[in-house]
Image (cartoon, rainbow, N blue to C red):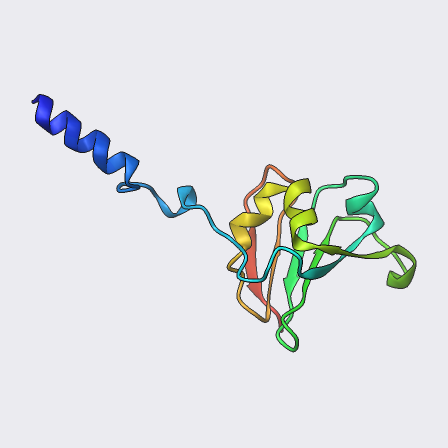
Length: 117
């Protein structure tokens, strides 16, 4: 019985039995990759609720629920690392395919993934 317990403990340390949700994801892009966001996310620390991974150029965009008429007035260019430091839950969608977007109601909700039309 003691040997079985030791085997189970060793397997858990090696990562066996973990669900995909427990597996740590990372962006394939370098941490210094520039991404688009807004002053609402960076300066006001609003929840990131909408993320796109553009098909055409592979760029990333991280938005809150805030509405704006002129993106150039609220746009900021920051690193992926900066985004991750503000909200580690974006790592859950680090493998978001090109041409897709993810959305959620707030930081505590699960991401929903959609293909861009």
